[in-house]
Amino acid sequence: MDVETMLAHCLAKPGAWPDNPWEHEHPVVKVGEGERGRIFAFLRSAGVGLKGGPSREAADEWLDRFPGEATVMAYIGRSGWNDLSFAGIPDEDLIDAVDESYRLVVAKLPRKHRPEGWEDA
Image (cartoon, rainbow, N blue to C red; front, side, top):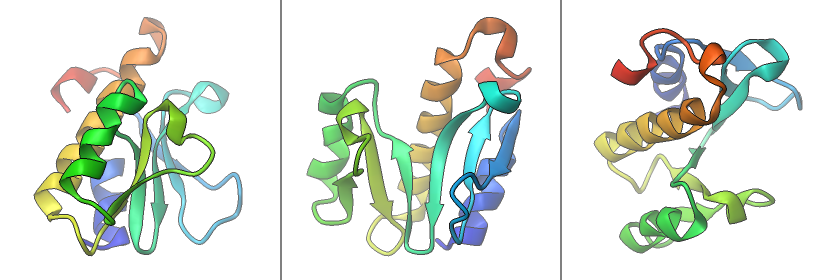
């Protein structure tokens, strides 16, 4: 997996769009309109930060499955966010993790701000 392939997968999700609020090398990917948009993927050259579960305990499954390749994200990790390495985690698992992060984030948006077709994405 590489960051360009991951970005393309993220942007294929209904309502997804790139943002660069901190002027990093790679954008974050949000879903939802404008200021109401919520991040579901933090892209970086070596991996991606994702919502790993609805709680820290659920997200810890990634840490158990991929020790050293999955780590708790700084600052927001207590809320179930993990950093996943492109190098040490199979592409199929990374794609599944993005899909789950998207689903978890969209489900928390008010119904009127959820994009059409998100349940099928």
